[in-house]
Length: 397
Image 1 (cartoon, rainbow, N blue to C red):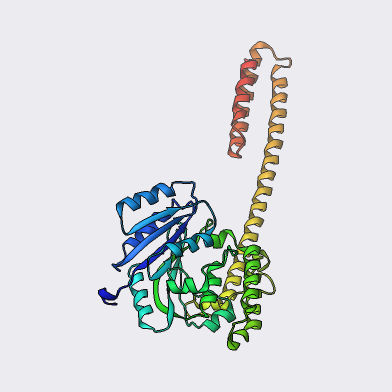
Image 2 (cartoon, rainbow, N blue to C red; image 1 turned 120 degrees about the horizontal axis):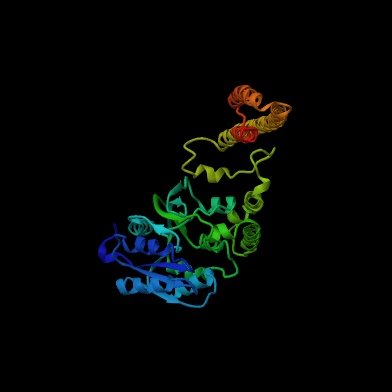
């Protein structure tokens, strides 16, 4: 670890807008770091929920370590640019209000940045979590170079990146015209200034949920912005020849990324052609050495089995439905037959019988009718037939 006398101040900037449900976890993850020389600045972009009150509470509890500022809503890029001007630290971390730093993140990143001369940023591996904080996957950067980031249009730098404040000043902060990918644009421009150091440890989390900018503003909006980003980057007159030579491959990469993200409903496993990000899979902890081709084939096979099981289920349901309908029709026919028998028996019991013989006839009919009822009950005839018989017996008595 860097000597305590040499530990530069680190400012963690957290832009936030209506993040009452997540930001407390973000703040606690910063204040629990083992790096002693740290300040946390929350930038409230005009929240309308309980976020301002919560930030004020933390400011009272941790004076000198945590403070917040508030302004009218003006978007993430402008908010961060304001934060760059307010930060006192020599080193900065941008930590979104739904993400967290893991143990030792600040100290390990600061050590890595200090150890490499000419480096302007240090970035860790990270963990993707769901809305409840449960782990989804861990992302590992197998290898990194600025040329590879340009060629693949893959933002290797996720949550938890530490960078020098001079970098933000030199490149002019975040581009305020970008909404979905201002961070990637920043890292592309910054990569022309100095080196990025990869720290091969999981030191931050990125929360994937419907309210995040990456999820909420994906699809066509993200694709359009990425295309504009590539055009503006390669329009720069100061690009080194080795970077400019990557332009054709960069465009191919962004077109493939667009095919994946813009119209996901047209990129299905059951289709003849499937576009998938092989680079992203190589960094995914779920890969465990398997190729993306084998995973796609296995996923397609699982889909085929599920389709077959669903077809069998639907077919069986249709068979059961037809059986029930047939039984209902049979019950209706038996009801009609019983009603007919009841009427005939009533007519027979009362037609021309003398009083003393009527009782005898009634007894014989009653005994025979009990047998009929018992037989019908064994055949699942509704028990309401017994009530019919009791009514008949009362009328005949």
